Image (tube, rainbow, N blue to C red):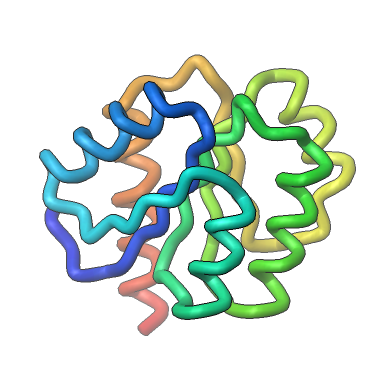
Amino acid sequence: MSTDKLIYLICAAPSERDSLTKYFQKHQFNCQVFDGLASGREGVAAKSPHLIVLAGSSLPSPDICKFGAFVEEHCESPIIALLTQLQMSIVSEMAESENLWTAEYPISLREIRASVNEALEELEAEE
């Protein structure tokens, strides 16, 4: 599924970021890539994406929750957060954002793409 919907990919780990970026490009997603939460916040403040994919395995859980709250204050973009099992338990207790969806590592690129497609289809249905 190619899309004109803008997706922000936020990933601090260089190898994971490269893999996800190449995979998203291969499947023709309109994707802007950020190397961490600070640059992701700047991106959200400048322009609201339709969807945010946050590869959070190398990010502190409290920072992920704060980012979710920041996004909710500035736009209505849903976030798909890819998290470790430990992060899942922490984020589920701390997250205040209703637009924060989580998926647990290990997760395949195909499963990530399916989650992105599902989220984009829901967004289109709401329009």
